[in-house]
Image (cartoon, rainbow, N blue to C red; front, side, top):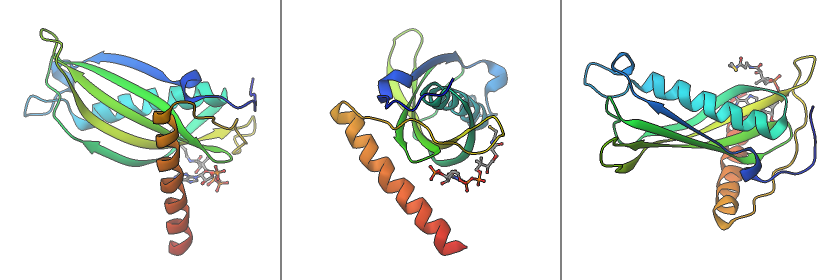
Length: 160
Ligand SMILES: CC(C)(COP(=O)(O)OP(=O)(O)OC[C@H]1O[C@@H](n2cnc3c(N)ncnc32)[C@H](O)[C@@H]1OP(=O)(O)O)[C@@H](O)C(=O)NCCC(=O)NCCS
């Protein structure tokens, strides 16, 4: 059931954990980017869905940066939270952290921003609840996401 009451990013945030298996690696022995991307999309999608409590489809991956490789056997922690909400779309920020299984040493491996759109019963975009950032970090992410969304919309307008 949808609900347009404002929510904080913490109310819909999702954290998932995976283990990189050999079949998920590239020929160099590190995690295949496409596998990491599918984990990102799934985790971010769940955060968007928890925010809007509706069908939420991926409209675009606005940015993805692979900062450090992840090795076979590493644990992969994926954290996603809604940064910003326009009318029907939600920007979700994702941070991927690799964790060495024996030492526990962690490193930020990947960062991404994705946009999801909420759909109604007729598969049409529909309004979602506003987001209310609470912490300083959430407020910073909100302000940055607002700039990205504005820039993307302006670019789209210029290109049409
Ligand atoms: C995403 C989708 C629903 C948008 O439909 P649309 O008819 O273009 O919708 P609109 O033009 O009315 O835009 C609706 C919202 O989507 C946003 N949007 C549309 N295309 C976008 C894109 N490429 N990137 C980011 N946001 C986008 C708009 O900015 C708007 O946001 P707002 O209401 O918050 O301002 C449609 O393109 C779609 O169904 N795409 C396929 C989704 C899919 O199959 N994903 C993969 C599997 S989940």
